[in-house]
Image (cartoon, rainbow, N blue to C red; front, side, top):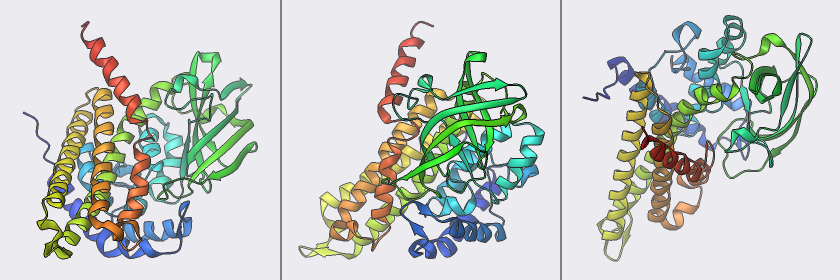
Length: 390
């Protein structure tokens, strides 16, 4: 029998997170330091300090590095509460890409790498980036098209390449850079400090979303030299490590955005209970009540996918297909919830008078990043046919 029950301590942490986000984070949503390219580092640091004072910082990281060491199921309930405000994950230090990078560092990094980078990352003292995605004809949804290169030169590695949509690069202290490594017939990842000569941030892209500190950058790596000791894990194993990072990271995106979808739904439901049209409240009209019902069902379906996949990860089961299904189901269900909520709010929904307009813009991008829905469907379909031969 599958038991999704979280630990009692996790439930208490989720309750504290919910209170903290509503009482202390939501008031910051009108702060001018939250701009088109995300909250500034000044705002981010202020929010992190608040979460730290409440003992809520980095719940996903092991206790020895300064976190709470939550299981994946525990993360599901805490991250959802943090996602009630899009600034909530920033405050708790569980936003992308830092959350996924911390997970990868903890599982693959050396003790020295963890001491140098993971401990300050868990404390919210630094930010990181993850540089895999490239403009055409390089790697996007197909990592095998990786065009950036890395090669040995004595005791150093030399990186060359062009990356884009690199979240959080401006202002980050270090990045996990992934490149094709022909010497080892694969791909290699390394921890590359942002101030290393040869790294150029060409531009910060103007994008639909605005909830990631530093925004999304286009970068060039020109003869970037780092010591061989910066390799993350083993050379040539980068594609395998990418899956170590991406499978849980897809799921934590779902957790956070589910909280935002609940916020949009709650906003719409309250409006439907008060606003009158044609002699009754909006909620009394069947068309609106059906949308509210569909929202409830989509939220529940998304949560069940999250919990089941989290349960599999906690048991050490292979969860690649489940992760793809959860990402696709959740991204589309969350989008439907927010879209319906905006429809219920009518003209009010397209203004910044409610948080729904901003949530709407941010969650639309979720159907694309971490793999578009179509790529995940293709991958799931291949697995279905492959399993027939077993």
